[in-house]
Length: 585
Image (cartoon, rainbow, N blue to C red; front, side, top):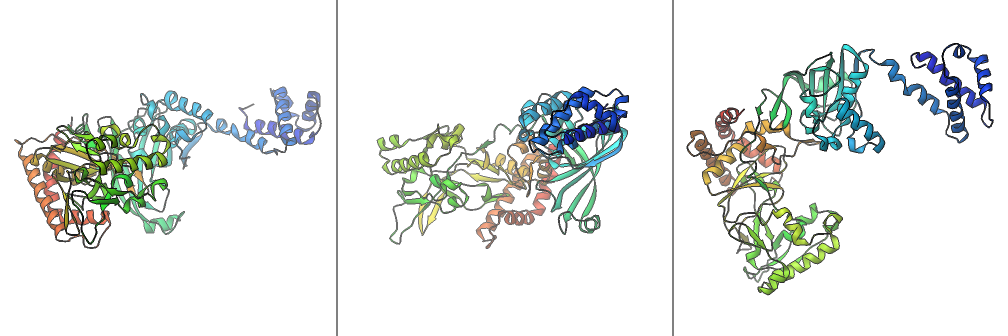
């Protein structure tokens, strides 16, 4: 019956009509046959499964009687329509559902998992990525497979994560099964607003038996601001700039991504990948970030009066917003740190003061509990820790119930593993639109509080930054030059996750690029180190001279620094480019 759409529709309509006419009754199968003979005689002439059709009619009648209305006949007529339309289309265009696998109903997930892993082989050997899979990708292949004729075209609006997200790697590399397509064109819509809540793209492909994905893919980059959502074609043409582009497949380690211009391919990342670490979790911030509460009569710099820094409540979760800890602490437990929003290319804004129960050791830091602090005579630190633990127990979330406040502070040893003996640290933010990095000399840092000096025990890296430790100033300046290079940022861009405000996460993705180990015998490395020193000094002088003025936007400040260092960054790129591409394997 499914081979004839008209016959199928008539059969379901007949079952529904019989159900409507017999609400409240219990008709027999013979009555149903007589009804068909009188009203739909052609259904008796073909090989129609009358008994099953009668059962459908009874089910529809029961639904009507339970006030579930007659929508179900419509559903039945349409649910099999795709079978009638299979393989009939020259062109399919659309905007499929954007939904992650993890948000689908459990029973539907079973079907989807079968389709993803076995039918189309989209995540071969990457089962852990299934919850992150965007169903629009599967929808794209499924629609091409079911509905396109051979040689026909599909064009879908898709999330821009298609360009870089790991769960789309098999699609980008053409490793999927069952259906042969080659990509004809791609549009990058990240620069268009207003559009969707997440960045979008468009992918065109042609179905062809045995076809393989090939690069580069011709495409367009669209940018501009539309006058409104759902703008007309004429409005869009007036508002948007369109740039022709070629998209290449870049392969960095196990990660792939689409990028405009020449791609890059390397089997291994930078030798620095394991040497950069994420900073310590100085959370909740009202417990550790402090300010010295100065008095007109002055204070004892070795035992300054402290309270939680005001800004910590602004960015804290609701349960921590109103917390202000007050007390004194021995100055040997004061440290300086920098947040990601304090970092500039080749420099940084003012340090932030933190009170931490840690002392430098030969290879790292040692934590001190409240009990140990009391035994050693550090009564003020002990009092601070006791109040911190009390607030922690009252306000902490479920995730932290098995940890005390110090275990949370040193999560995964990210505080105690920091080496106080290293002379230099290179810092860059975990997230930013544009990568930036700076060198910090690891030495006691003084805070000027109303004319009095409070000296800290050094610098600790915070969790919103990644850091590298070295005793070589040349190596530190070499690295900061490379990390601030225009080329490195351009190569990183396609790997960054996207949000409403553009590229964000950096983490260790930049270290998947082939940044070579510093070699003092290499001329290029020494030149980059020298340029790093020049740029760092230039930014330091600019900051000391009050260059930022009243500007507080970190994005604006970073742009000002980049503009100020335009010529130096061009020279840096000239040295970095051959190093990176020479490392391709």
